[in-house]
Amino acid sequence: MGSYREAIDGYLGGKDSVPDVTLYRQQGRVKYGFGLNAEQELAPALRAFGRLGWNDGANESYAYTEIDRTTEVGADLGGNRWHRSHDKLGAAFVVNAISGDHRRYLALDISALNICRMILSCTWRMQSKAPASSATI
Image (cartoon, rainbow, N blue to C red; front, side, top):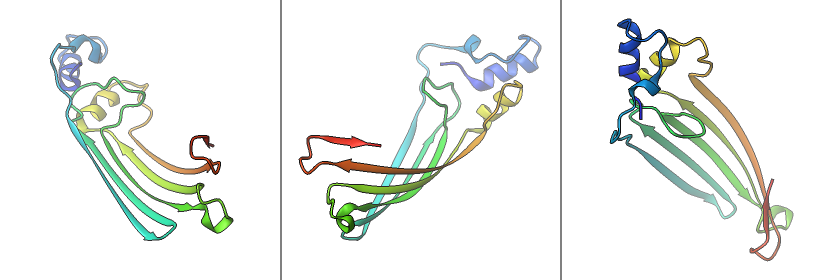
């Protein structure tokens, strides 16, 4: 993994013509973090949840999207009200962000588009009466 801080220093020090984290990859670097999940049943068919995630943000990520901080809150409702007990309808609000080093690295490059992302997600999970055949839309 490449170090954002080393890439910033290499660019600002005149060593590199553009900030490039791939020039500062080093075998054995570790990216650490944690996740926390809490769920609470509010009523027999209503559940609320919250999730937090954090990683050090010092080194590049090998992931679909690079997120160093995340917060999510939401709820889901079981399908008993519409006589489909295996269905769930849910909504969540998510805020994702990146670390200071990550933000400074991207700010040096004009292609940096997203520093913080807010998402509202709605899902509907339909399930036939037999749990083995389910579909999510």
